[in-house]
Length: 250
Image 1 (cartoon, one colour):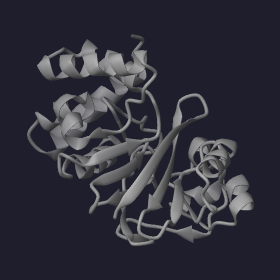
Image 2 (tube, one colour):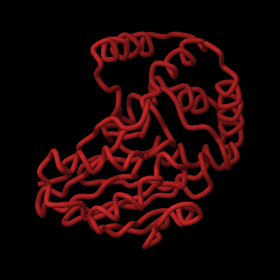
Image 3 (cartoon, one colour):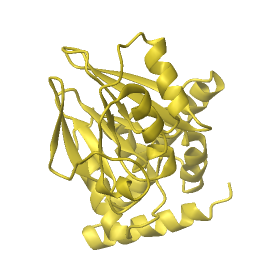
């Protein structure tokens, strides 16, 4: 028994997630990017309802559907404290907390940098991580509220997970991220991964999830900083790359 993960498109480029503890059937939505789509997915799957909403951060494409989804299913909403400034939230989760989804243990991990209070959910026993907009295939989120040092510390938390950890991020940005990565130089690992990504998208398939090992090998926001010695130099390199990506026109 473990965690059943259902990924589906929402909005223009978001992904929604329904996660079900197979032992008990208890189900949560990770964020609420599009209420109507989430409600429809629960009904399409023939689920008896939705038991929880688990928010990662306050951005509208992550908490904007909270009220409507809760109204439909009556489920409590757990998540980062910052969600409260815009959306309904019943229970606050903080770094170091543990959320029990039936028999599945989800460790709450602070991943500040994209926003100051963003959190992720780690299913360590199943090797799954729900990381919102913190790290994408070949990319990372914009640094809206954090600093390079704060964001880099969060990326290190992900980079240090076991290599076979599956990373579930919340957007299909991979082709754009690939173009930026290629502008920095192409080695064998990036060439092979780029070929796979283009083939997936040509078929209309998702590029999410990826793994920690893949991101360490070819994601420039991990790969190049990790070539530097010491935290300060790594954070500076990360900040340089994030600034370059912000203005990249490729």
